[in-house]
Image (cartoon, rainbow, N blue to C red; front, side):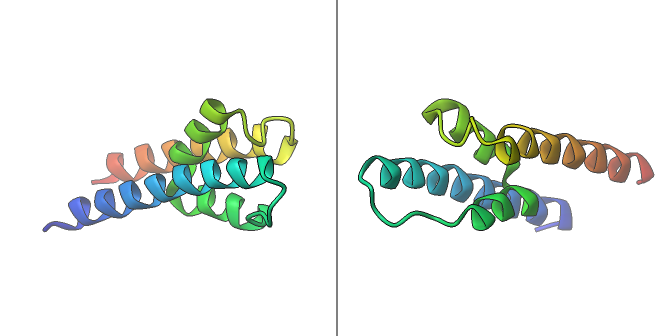
Length: 91
């Protein structure tokens, strides 16, 4: 497995995890149960799960009224795309 393949695999895992955890947090919110702390939700987006986080936010209408999420997650995604383009162009 090449380094690029390994990185893509890790990103897929993080994005699937982010999607599931955001969905679970929405479900927990509906049940008035103990929730996933916001700092962990944001951390998932920052470490590479921004696509999964944003997809789950839009699909389940979760955290869309909180500016940290409605602005922060798409901004993190844009920064990650820009970084990816920069790194690819350097090779």
